[in-house]
Image 1 (cartoon, rainbow, N blue to C red):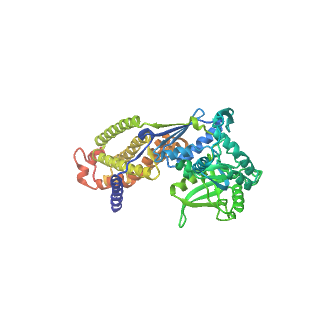
Image 2 (image 1 turned 90 degrees about the vertical axis):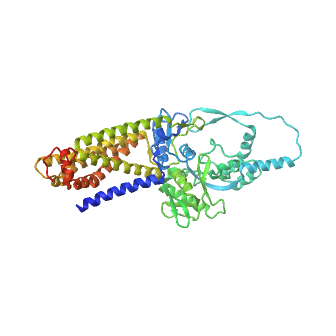
Image 3 (image 1 turned 180 degrees about the vertical axis):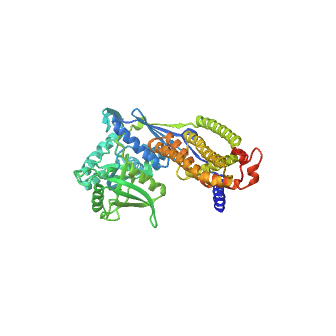
Length: 544
């Protein structure tokens, strides 16, 4: 008896406290793309990639999106295009940037810092203002240049301005010398040039020296710091293969006391050999040549300095002045940096999805759900009389606790509520009501066999709970299979159905049975005319 009171009071207190705390916090469920709107990104591949490559790209992009905490994100193929729907994303630009990363993640040695484009422009202007006037010369006209995009079977015609073409041509001997291993000669030649161009995407090859900007300075525009970087190879002829993201087995952001946020990178055996070779060569050098650049899509994502000439084990810690977001971004890029296909940025489309239609559907769905629940409540009251209130209170507890959990998960892990999730919650009402019906019908059988109501509530629950447990386990298995094998909105339906089913088991054991036991011990509640427990069990002559 006392145990039932403890179960009942504890359950009610936990649910009420959680629900009130949720309301007082002012938080609400995070809504999915169909309910709150969001961003839809369409990625168009270059050339004619294979179906297998596109499937791998879809999996990698989905992993990236999931690692961002984007719940109910949809990553699907439409022909050769990949469509990414991003609901509930707090930083949409960041999500779009990470989703669109398509180039190979590479590790390159830092050879030197290069003046930013703004500094170059200022130096050129100063030189021009102090130089003697020159006679005018005919102006060159821009000419089309044939470039072949990697991974494409077609040749694209692009127009390069004459000034840029001249700068590229002037810097090419220095870049060739750098690639051949003559770093000092390359630096001397580059220092004599009025302008050092940033390496284009077409020329950004793993075996060549490149000039790339630092991503952290991208908001500064032309003031972005730049680096001259060596080939992503351990040996001169790259016989051991380039040092890329393929050599990484995992990466995680961590908080280390005294260091702040760091990134722990786990390398494969091949990667361990390469990182040690890089460290041995660069650690003794002065800054910035003791740094290793992590590059992706023509940008230096990070350029940490080596603190040792060798690494023991297969885990390397990258530390620096990282914020939590910076560390998590870098870890994500290291884990999911490379895609097997290249996407055409000029054809990429980004659309804002309006939530208007979804909200209308949500209101209609909620109205339908409330009407259905009201009809179920009336039917339970007509069928089980006083025991029908037990069903109603139980449904209210499940609803309050589900709401609290959904809000909590939405704020902590980005769980988004979609129309499919709402459907799963409405369907779960039937699962919950079934548990009460199984128990009450078992009580009827026990009472009709001549037992007292007081003795029947425990015996009937022990036998009916086996049936309830079996039914809920079947529902949980179905929800788990759907969640693991399906994608997009179907996973939302499965998750919320499974969540509500789990709550049903808890409420059945810790609320329904204890409350019925306490009610059955009140003779006045048992014998009440028309609405008493005996009337609800169709046993008017039942005894307490």
